[in-house]
Amino acid sequence: MAREIVDLLAEVRTGTGKGAARQARRDGTVPGIIYGDGVPPQPIRMKYNYLLTKLRQGRFLQTLFNLKVEGQPDVHVVCRSVQRDVVKDLPLHVDFMRIHDDSRIELFIHVTFINHEASPGLKRGGTLTVVRSEVELEVTAGDIPDHITVDLTGKQIGDVIHIDDVVLPAGAKPTIARNFVIANVAAPAGLAAVEDEAPTA
Image 1 (tube, helix red, strand yellow):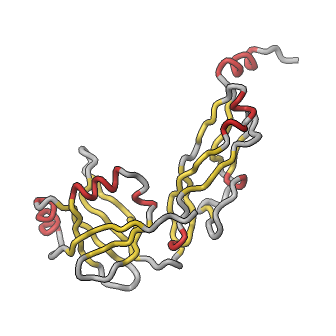
Image 2 (cartoon, rainbow, N blue to C red; image 1 turned 180 degrees about the horizontal axis):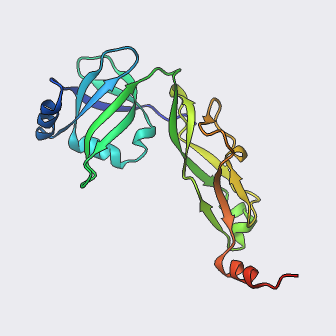
Image 3 (tube, rainbow, N blue to C red; image 1 turned 135 degrees about the vertical axis):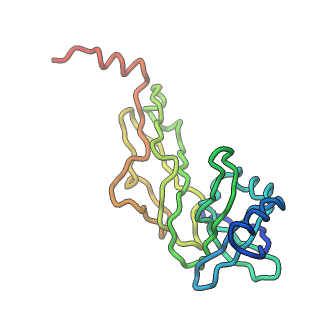
């Protein structure tokens, strides 16, 4: 399922450099920049509370946005970085990259686990241990998946789920070549302790 393209609002920021950025923050906005696609960088600013709300909704660095800047044509962007205050962890600056719908980009995509009730291992009291709640994939910008799905049907205690076990959306591929672990079904603590104490032949 492709993710809906979300509108994001910004304003043109006049002036560049540290002085202009400080002034933007004094005005209750967060300075930023749009770059890429062979077009000169465009300084922007976003209302502080508006940006903070968007950041707290999650997956900000994984979302394709339709950036709307007054007086300019809409442009599709992804956020490449959010500079934060090291003490307060609040946004100080944002960088956006222009992209086309057919651009190939690397993003972290959320992992969703389904059919817990159909896993014999979990029914026996096993625990799903999630190693990666997000997986970095190379995807097409116009078809960014909302998530990838791991089906737990039939999973037993001791089973390990690797990236190669997951059916990825069309056109998506992992950025890491090796067959890395996403999750496993671990034995319940009591069972693990009994097995550890069992005499060996």
